[in-house]
Image (cartoon, rainbow, N blue to C red; front, top):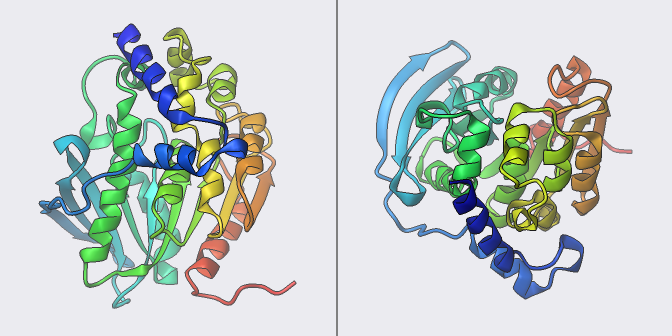
Length: 308
């Protein structure tokens, strides 16, 4: 199984092309094409439980995603706003769509809805077997499917009549920031992207990270496999421009080490903003979190942009 995964990734190298700094138009189109999908395919939405949590209502649903999988999703919509702008939230490795509740608690008072899905192999899509690191080593296409499934979530946002799909900001945390760099780059319907505790350069991440999943991927022989460039955010994040991007990282992060964060920062183009906080991968200080909320509110035109 490990050999199969590595062979699959070697095949991806042929499609990955040059580094972000030397990409030609053809290189970029080849990279982008990996995340193409049939936008006309029916979503086949199946509504689930609805719960009222006071400041916002939680709606569960599933839709048809990449490869025919059912994708569990959640919409957290403020109850007092007719057509709120939207944050598409991408959760971290080992997490699930339920992590979007904290984001909704912060943004619902601002009149913002939050939409999130379970990444492939996560949440309601989890499968029995070894840890998530070994599962991803055996099925690296799960990352590609997750990017496409988030694009399908954007399709869903656009067909709802009670969400302002023309004001859409992506917020990704950890793995969600890594994959969010790709989603925002290949899908121009996203107006801005906030990438929290993310990084770039798979070799750096996998060889330096203390996350157990990184150790599993190292054991699978993937840490030095250049074919991971196919999924490396450093090849994508620059293509978010001219839409704004915010990148937030901890100086003592041992999951996404600072050198990996810096690689992502350097690959991004203007307009970009970088925030560092003193701390690790979790436990972002309240003042930093508040700055993130303010940045999102500005991008969604909920407040005026500050003047220098």
